[in-house]
Amino acid sequence: MRREALAPRPDWPAKVEALGLDFHTTAGEPYWWEAACYAFTAAEIDVLEEATETVHGLCLEAVDRLIATDDLAQLDIKPADQRNRDMKGGGEVIHSQSNRAFCGEVDTMQVWL
Image (cartoon, rainbow, N blue to C red):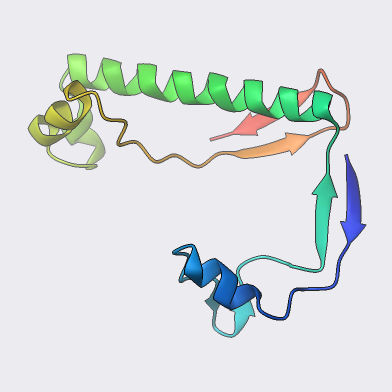
């Protein structure tokens, strides 16, 4: 992985708004830094994709367990009966965010949930 310097796009707010992201700036500060990006090799992308698929699968297993034990209400996410209907309907309604740290080695990945 390498960090590359970039000139921020002058019209980046309009471009991301066109994609539906309307919280790109908070208190006058941009949500992300446009003056740099990271370039990855194909092998590094494979590691990131595998880690993402693994974490997503674990999240779905956790939700299945919470539904089976009717414990979703304890997490104050949504009433368990509604979540049960959503998940049993086959739709993936879960949003998750996890942070990954790529350590520079193709076989090393750290994930925080």
